[in-house]
Length: 87
Image: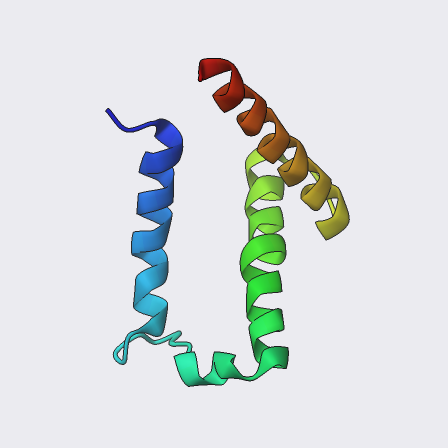
């Protein structure tokens, strides 16, 4: 049985995949990401900016990207500890 985290990850990835397809209105060309500056911008948007917006909307908070990054780091630490105790 898959965990909720696995389920959510698959659902999010299925929504992201079309971003890289030819017929997507909001298409991102993979070749554009070969430029390190563009790749940095993309990963910052994917890993920090967009999740902070979602977090703020769901929690009605006003966390900045650094605040959200701290929250995300706590979640990573929390999940590592949970997996370590389950082993």
